[in-house]
Image (cartoon, rainbow, N blue to C red; front, side, top):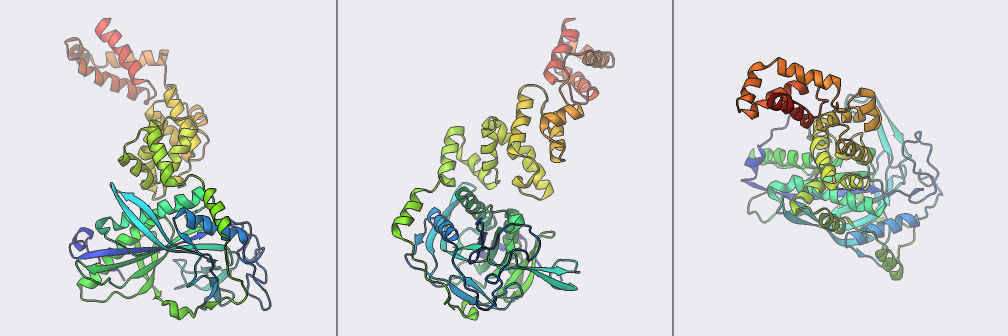
Length: 499
């Protein structure tokens, strides 16, 4: 069944969106949260398990100190208050990928609370308040086999891989964000982008959304303009790319507006996001906290981080993204708007690494925000997911700078790099893409262009020098774009205007 949708601009005249984001981050620890099992991604199913993470009778958990430290560092980086005393709880619900029948999480006494993260969209700063940062264990992974969608509906059977069960998981929950209006989708994306940058800077996780180490649940509700109460929210689960976060918010705004316009009631539920269509579909009714029957985990002692240790962790934090942006903006001499473009495009780190590899800031920005951004958009992927490294982009700009290739040939060389044919210099050599110097072949092409267009030559010699462009174009076509345009123009001027 296809949802009825309202045009985005139209719904904004009647409704105001409120967004909330719950982001789950798998920490990059060597072992799991409550046992010593490995956390290697992609291992053979069910080879990284033990009685503790499988919840077998008599097994006892022990908290991972490195995971606690990473959670506190994340909280500090987000300006949170670090609790002097917190504890774990059992979140009870039956699901095939929860081997114990409950998830060890934190409920009413989380490790970090009351933080914030500022994001900028189109020149306006939006403050996203963080309600809590808490530590828990990840679940296993269900594999539904035989269906067309990979979901349980229509599948022949299901398999469960418990390798992921028990991996340390940090959940970062925002307070409701109101007032973003038409920018709500972009604000959601900018927040997750900024959060990913913070965690990556801390080295707490590889935050690879395509591997599930960063997952986002998108909450969205609409309320009539001017209403005092917020509408019923839906929660779109496990959105796994920055682009999809934005698309999920936009789709839910359009869908919920249609439901409300028709006099219907938005159902509080979880929903699935479909990457291929950008749509969401109903999952299950959303439980309230009371439905999980939380109670303190009896097998784990409370966490009581020492104040001196927390202060030591705070003093040891690296330069955070906000400070880094200010520094780079000053070093590169950028206007604030262009820095915002870099950040929102997910290109800042890539440009920084490209500059570190030898490119000028201007050249690095030109390629990442221009040609490479276009290719990423056409492919529907993030910039960082393109099969080209900052070092390769720096090498490409060097080849252009030294005159070995021009921009047109550089784009052809980039095709080869993205196709896995090697670094830019190797692609240029293997495909013969180097700029043609003043060789016999180029002389012949220039002479042929002059001989083939006597009317153009007459115009040039009659004073219409701009007509020389037609001859330049003919030579560039004949040389398949490998001639240097400035050299060609000089050669033509020497023959047509002088000689």
